[in-house]
Length: 107
Image (cartoon, rainbow, N blue to C red; front, side, top):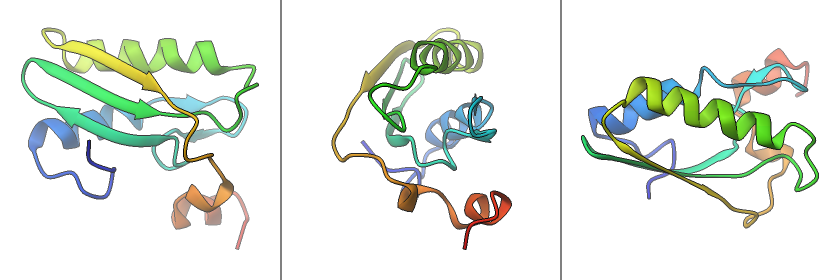
């Protein structure tokens, strides 16, 4: 799987853009820019992602997974969707994009 910065195919880029529509309700930013998406693989028939949450105890985890699945099904209605939840590496605020850190008022 490729990281969000390594994507090259139109399908992979379309997956990233679909996932940017999923907003973490506690932080108010999209899950891609928060660094929650660890990997993407995509073709015309399969879409796979590896993702995490800000914490294993995230109270919005199931809701976010449902939204991720819904966005991917909407963008790729004929593809098989595979979402893998992973906890390694452990997410940290260092994974947030510079632009998102700035919008959150962080340096």
